[in-house]
View 1 (spheres, helix red, strand yellow):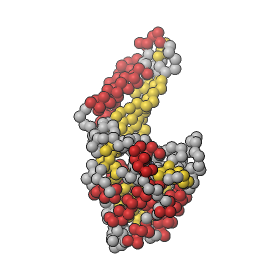
View 2 (tube, protein in one colour):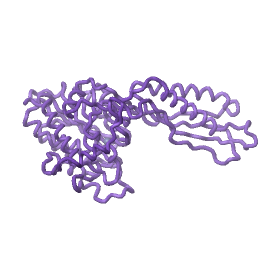
View 3 (cartoon, protein in one colour):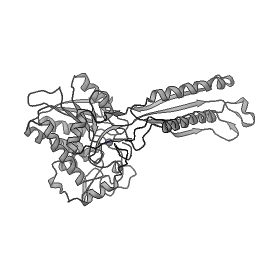
Length: 419
Ligand SMILES: [Zn+2]
C-alpha cells in the first residue's frame, strides 16, 4: 500500500497527526484488555515477507479456524510456496453460501532489509502504548483481532455466514487474492460484502483510485550528431510522448470531472523513469520510459492509453522513412482497478454502524478492495493503524487503535449474530 493523505467526503483534508495526538491523550489501553493481543503477536512471529513462503502462517490459521468449525480452502501460487486461505463459518441454520461478510487481509509484509529496526521486527514488542513489529499496521492486527473474535461470534450464534479471506502477494501487486476470488465466485459463494482491514486509522473508506502502468520503448537510428537528419532521435521521440502525457495531465486537472473527496481530486498521469542515449555526439538509438495513470474510478485508463497509442502511431511513419526498423512499443506492467461504492451499499451501512461514524472517506492508494468489488462483493476498507507507519522501520500501532478495532468487531457482532 502506498502512502497517502486521507480526505473527507466534504473535500477537507484530514491529516493524521492530530489523530495521533488524540490517541496518545486518551486513557491508556492495557494489552491484557485486548482480546486479539496474543493473536497479533502470534501472526507477527511468522516472517511472511512477500518473497518468502506464507504457508506456516496459513496452516496455523487454518487449523485454528477448523478447530472452531470452519470449512477452509487453499489456493496456491504456481510453485505452491504460498497460499490464500478462504475459510467459512456457516450460519447457525447451516447457510454457508448466501449473504454474510468477508473479512479480508493480506498475510504478506514488506521486507525489513536495510531498515534500522530497534527491536526484532518479527517479535511484536510493546513500548509504552505502541506495539512495534513488521505488519502490526500493514496489516496483521486487523486479521488477528478478527480471528480472535471468532469464539465470541460463535458464542452469540451466527445469523449469517462469516468468511475469512487471507491472501498472499498483496504487497507486490495484489497478485494472490485474484485466485482466491475466482475460487469463491466459482463455488457460487455470494457474500453481501467485504471488509478489507488495511490501515485507515479505523476510518471507513468507501472508494480508492485505480492505477495502470506501462513501459514505452522507442527504437530510433544512430548517427553522428553532425548528421541528425540521417538518424532517428529516440530520446526526442520519447520526449514528444512524455510531453503529450503532461498535456493530458493538465487536461485532467483543468477538466470538470473532479471528485473533491480525494486529496488529489482528479486523475493523474505521471512519468517516473526515463533513460536513453549514450553520448552527446551520437543521435540516440534507444530510449525507454515508464509511466502510470492513477485514475478516479469513473475515468477510463484504457481510453487514455488508446489516445497515447494513436499519437505514437502518428510519429512512426517519419521514423521508419529513415529506418524501417524503428518503432515505438508499449509493455503493460501492472493494473489495479479503482472502486467507488459511493457509500450506498449495504456493506457501507454496516461499516458506518461498526465505525460509529457517518463520515466516509476516499483514498488514493490501491488495495484488494477493488478486486472484491469487481467480483460483485461490495467492499469497504477499515483497519487499525495509520498508513504513515506502514512499510517503515519500527512499524507500530497504538493500543488505542487496537481497542478501536475491537470495538468495531463488537459492533459487527450486532450485525452478524443472532443475539
Ligand atoms: Zn497492506
